[in-house]
Length: 234
Image 1: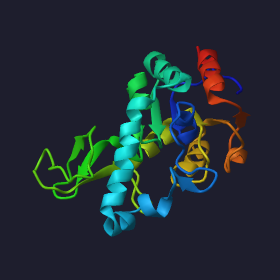
Image 2 (image 1 turned 120 degrees about the vertical axis):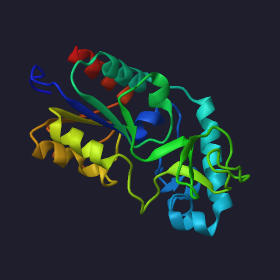
Image 3 (image 1 turned 180 degrees about the vertical axis):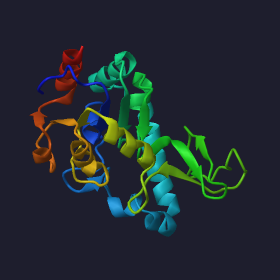
Image 4 (image 1 turned 60 degrees about the horizontal axis):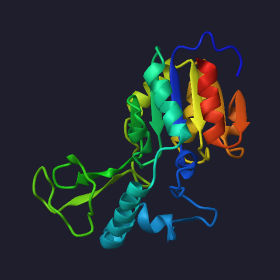
């Protein structure tokens, strides 16, 4: 990356490749399946209406698995950057796990929701949730048995988009780490940042669909490249 002296405000986007190094299954595997399920069967509002028990069980299993994985070097390096960076900083993750949170990141937004959260369809209130939902527990806020995973499914609007767009417009550097560059609106963040004058950097295991849009694209293990890059900033 060129001259970093004029960087003050940073926005970072992370995707499934970051959590993969902790053993979390990436959202869509090479066979097109997510943990053995077609995405259409577990990640759409229609799937939930059609077979709510299947969908609840799927996310119950993903939620339980979080207890068996730990933050990796990428999560730790980005938490350090968050803690020590004096300018504006925003970490936006597409991941629904809690590994950034456990690593200590504070200036963090989960744009696709969180496994450890439940959304009540009756009162629209979110509640922290670590247990199962398949057995139809009552909402802690209103008591209705109307909880669903607090996950943004295909066809639904990602969370925090106004805050993200404002941060992209004001950033000096946009960095994308471990994302496929295929899922919008996140795939368009690089163009938004560039249009507003930001430098752009991609760190990914392989070239992504959007690699050509970045000023610089670095390929390799994020667990090695990201700590090196963070160290270089200081």
